[in-house]
Length: 332
Ligand SMILES: [Zn+2]
Image (cartoon, rainbow, N blue to C red):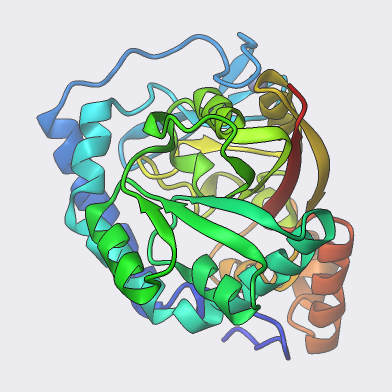
């Protein structure tokens, strides 16, 4: 079995066993239902981020096709799921299941956000913070525990999520809506958005909405899976996070740069803070799959506890781990 990395968070801690077993089964059922009940939207002939027409087929998962842009390496669902399809997906038992496993791994996930809060404070130390897609509030909990200097507002389209947030944190402001409908120009000093952009059909429109609610020079902090990372290079088309119609836009540093430039932001810095998640995921992955990219040496050494621990740190230091934390600033 996977060796635990001392003092480091592992894949099994944030993705509970129950989730890993049930997820695939549920996704197949829901995807099948969606594809049987609804009409697909039209395929597009260019990359949704950089507009290049140079696309290649990447893989198919749960009946959805994914393409890859040869110019910026962005991976995306093509055709994109329709709004009707997403409506069914996000109101299915899937959402409840997701919230349940987030609750189960709540405590294990708080430290991920503590690290991010430390970084945020290096750029901005007070002001009005808008958290987009707060869900069950793991980030809000981390802010509270770290005696956050920010005035906190949350924005989430789920009525259920907002009710729970309100009862847990009565002092925060809550908008039960999509950010696109917020209509609150220049109201915030910083926006945070964790693992959300990969779910959005039009990421450029979303980024523009974020720019709109930020003051001039305001900061946008977000995270998303990073396909140019170690774990993605090893698992490639078999990566566990290829989850359409949930994950429909999968970014890398190049496509993030294009996204920011197009929507009025500049990239200030980025980090991949959890190399231990890559190492524990790849350890697991190699027990059940082969990989063309791993190499014989690494395939053996990755199970050596001391090597694994040092390698995890190296991935974080070189910014090559599987989840990217982006620091962007509004420039227009
Ligand atoms: Zn592209």
